[in-house]
Image (cartoon, rainbow, N blue to C red; front, side, top):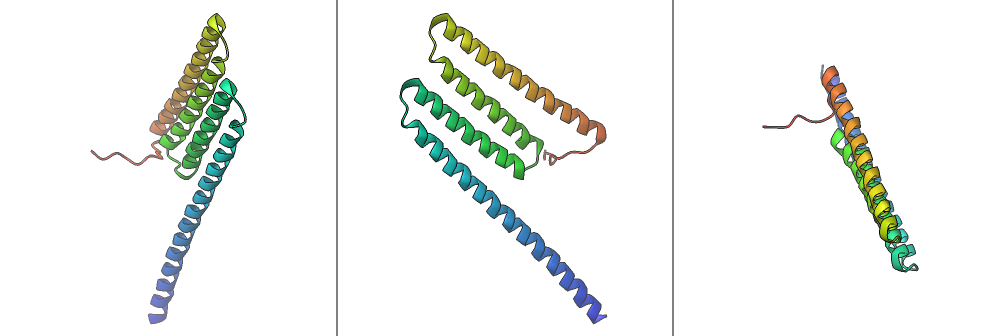
Length: 154
């Protein structure tokens, strides 16, 4: 009897230790990825220093968008909720829009207006696609009864 109890206690302790180790590994892996993103962002921004004028502004916008997108995608990788996934998609669309607007700054007059209108239309289309994608996911989870989100407290 005492041997069985000891075996069960040992198995439970091993299970908790394994789970704690996995969580520590996840944290350290996430931190390493965050550090890699930061280093890449610094390198990308440093490349922009040699440029001037709007080319430098475009380069900086691209670097900033790339960094924000990478951070949002990393968050979505570890937090598998629909909210994190949507945030990653929204962040990517916003970054693309900011870069497109910077590229339009090189143009003048009607050409610039047309470029800005195209950038805005592309952005609105991306937002609508994201909305539709996540509305569809909501409908699917409502129909199946499965949710990946925690219920909100009232």
